[in-house]
Length: 175
Image 1 (cartoon, rainbow, N blue to C red):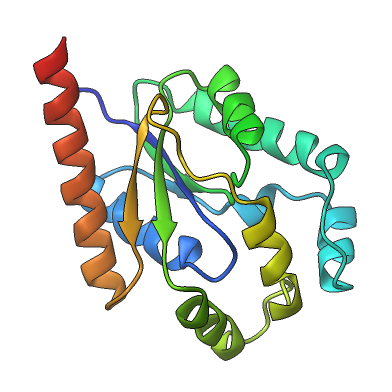
Image 2 (cartoon, one colour):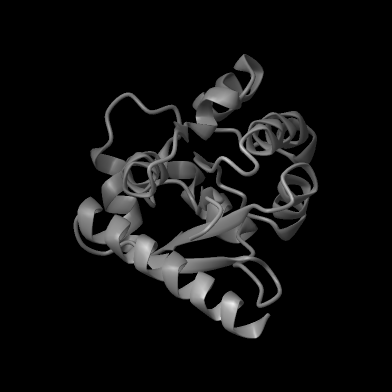
């Protein structure tokens, strides 16, 4: 990769965004930002109570992540964000036009089992159904790759790096 990407690690809760994001950032030699840290306290309180966020809750959060992505343009970085809907990803791209998405995907049963093992996280497994119902996978015209979350975090991060490298080669070949 000539110019480091700003990568948004996306997916439903429990796919490992907070685990894979820092590993991917380390491999790419760029900083990592935890998307949950951009949530205002009201959003965290709402999710902790088991209430899904609506779009009005998400816009300021997405704008804050987008501002961070914009500040990393040309420098590279990795940030986590569920980015479940196309409209959310469009909003992130509007702030950080060069953003590339790594969509962490996997079997619902595996993701639910991993969520159940988490300690101290505000997102209850009860919200997983709403996450899958909201999810709009990356479309062919969106900059990004899908990466399966089976295996160890190191294996997943390696697959993400390989997928990004293949994405870059494909883009270079088509330009």
